[in-house]
Length: 105
Image 1 (cartoon, helix red, strand yellow):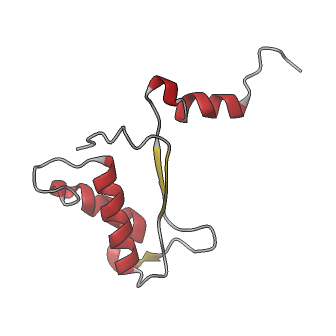
Image 2 (cartoon, rainbow, N blue to C red):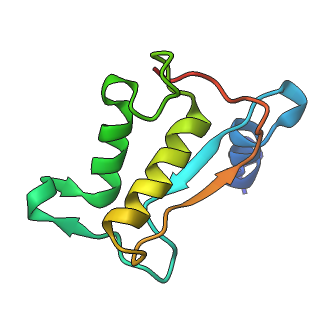
């Protein structure tokens, strides 16, 4: 084995879970593992993508201050996807560092 080879697990940990550096990530998936990410012709996207776009347009996911934080977008997307799909699609999220709730818009 090449001693200079990158260990994928160590790389993942250093990029996404190194809380010592006050960094981290928040991941949201379109649906649970046993569910299907639904698409409809009338939305011109998948339900998840439509919810993300709606949340970012004009700060709809925000609290009226013109900005959208990661957590606000995640909450908006989760609620909208569940509503549009009538509970058949449930986005999931993984937060490695909830203290880093930065603005994305």
